[in-house]
Length: 230
Image (cartoon, rainbow, N blue to C red; front, top):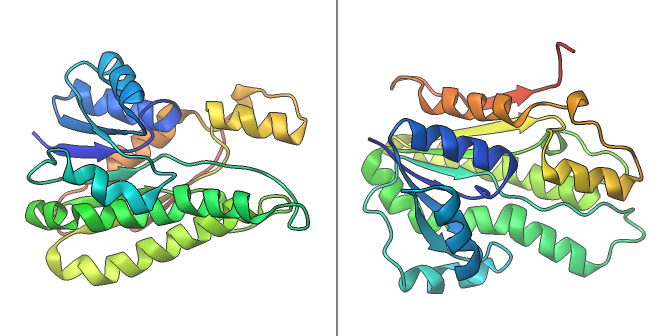
């Protein structure tokens, strides 16, 4: 039975991954931004445990965790949470840039740092659910794409640093996924949302679990998932 720490379990890809791992009997520690959200997650995922820490304030994660019991070893750390605000470079101020980089890049780096001892103990796996925006940047997506390009750099550097400790690192780059975040993006873009046009969250969850379940001695480093087959 493996132990997983998951961010973003409240909806979309994270919720699907959490359900799948619970169904096979694994131990889950779900990160929640506050006590109220932790209660909601505990009710939604019976048997799962929760950790409280706000990804929007990565500098406070160490303090928050010092008041909680962390798992003794972590078989996988799954970075699935993320935020997005669209806008042209000429319109986006520091507040949007700072909040986007904090949640999408600095928080994953800090969370990984804090759990590296447990990951090394388990010879575990860190999975970054990135984005197609982590490989290319389109107009109006500068802040989000910059955070995701940075997340790719974080994963690549971490892979080189931790390979000797047996820790595997995988980045997953989904195209547009049918999630509540995608609905928000469409509202920002002023477009009609049709979930059938996008990658199902279940498909990305399957990709994540495939990487986790790869036998020892092999490592999936980068996986892209695109809409298709309609």
